[in-house]
Image 1 (tube, rainbow, N blue to C red):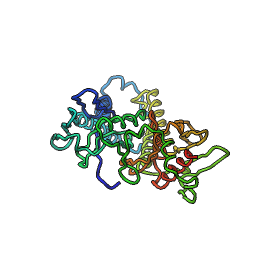
Image 2 (cartoon, helix red, strand yellow):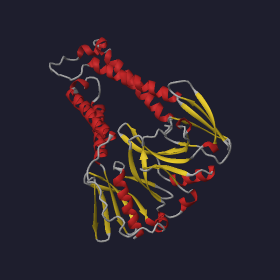
Image 3 (spheres, rainbow, N blue to C red):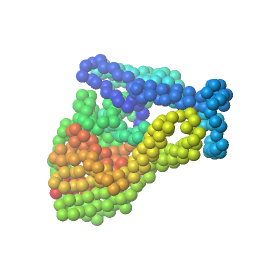
Image 4 (cartoon, rainbow, N blue to C red):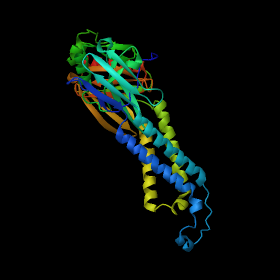
Length: 394
């Protein structure tokens, strides 16, 4: 998607309720997350400062005179001074980032006819604008892939779309997939604007009144031939198998993208930190109790394991008994994620995620939105969507 039609919002959770007017809401980073980042920043900075002055503090306490000197020769990759600098820089960065993100906010006011937005970014002067509701083109639903360190989530964003990206206004933001389609439809009906989303073919518009209609009923009116998928091929990224009355679409291999590379880097950095801590174990024991060191080892290993499992996770679709069953396979274990009945499906859409420049398949009902195969090409997703439509018709 080459078009610059995105406005990144500040919140992870946001809901502009328009039941009572005028309505006002502030778009800002989560306060709890900023407090945690600030506290960790202070802790890292204080620890780095302590390690930096450790040599100056040596011998100050009288009890140190009674400690026998060690004859062990222990080598480390990084000196204490360098490690203390790293901790202080990391801590200062977290402190500054938490302060900056706290000061950054956007206030949205709506009186029923016009929006008044006041924006205070991190860099640049604060500014504001007014825009009539009638100047907006539609209510857009889009997907954003978010990375919280090692943890990744899909963020669902409902927003008022404007040709000027700086005037795009958030209506609802959440990492929860429940009730997204109903909210999207309700906003479209409330503002008398078409619901829109970005697919592999560009911007797609829907009829809000038809969004409550069963997808099975809709595709049957298309009068597609029973063998319309005949001769259409897909890549080697997945396989399609059939056994009796069950059909399986399975991701064949790991598809690398930006966030896969981030997982690999996280594993590498955490592994290096773990090895450094093991080599310096006897030195660390002089300053930190064994139980805290063991907790550190457990946490680092758990984070490495999570990053690895996120990297190798694969998606599986099982079609049987007029249902789509979605599994997430991690190594040799398949975990059931969702079960969607054919008659409850309201849409099977290919959506665009601008943060990864990739597409995903959304299976949508009134109460849930299941995101699957979020690393496949648009061509493969079209094939899977066509296959599912064929199964619904059959």
